Length: 358
Image (tube, rainbow, N blue to C red; front, side):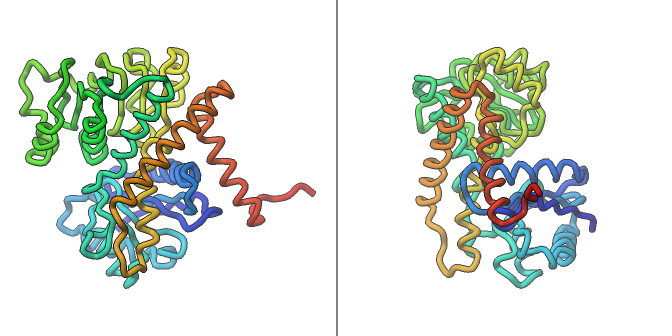
């Protein structure tokens, strides 16, 4: 077993961030994501620290359980005192349960199955739910209604599908979606309930069920004519070249790190607003806050309370960041980062972790 744990900052609490499994995991990738978690926890004003872990392995390996158990054993001096494991790419609820079992501690991991007292993240769609709420809050900040707003979603996985579902409930119109298998576009609007059913039945291959007239090349879902673009797939998918071609007036980041710094400057120059990832997709972190509290409780967290908290905190933080950016003339990412940094620095100062000048 080969793995990496990056604990970025614990001034505001125990390190908390997902564990991902992939044959291509890199230390740099995990370090970037650990830093994002530091800012995400601080931005939503919840008292945990930034951390992330990675396991260098194939998530489809027949030896997956042995690998996960070995990972947990090697980090027994860090879990859960300094780091609480969770779910990310390549890891399932069963894997979280295995980490708890291997270390004999319910506090070792969150994301376990509901029968073990876990929060059903994917069933509730907490991250996507928050992304959709961020969309509505950002549109309202611009004086626009979400009703009839045309939305394109890159990535129709757990986050993208949940965002599409909530946006449909709010009256928005989904005009494009994509999976790793391809992209679909209909300027007159896609049938969201139908596509959610197709995803449940066929997974990423659901796009193959679309008519040829509605199929578009992968990546073009980022470039369709729409009001709102939600990149909810991979990192760095919007670089300067893509940013120059985007036709949406608002980008709400559903994935972690989907835009490059250079792209964000270019987008700002085109008057395209970008709601930062650690503001828009913090629903998972907010729900994880409930799960962290529930690790040693005999009672399950209440789903309605979780969704209400995700909606309220995400909407409030979206408006706060956009207001701050507008007043200061800075990019929303810069405004959000300054807010998070100040909260982390204050915690570090209060704990005596910042060297004082002589």
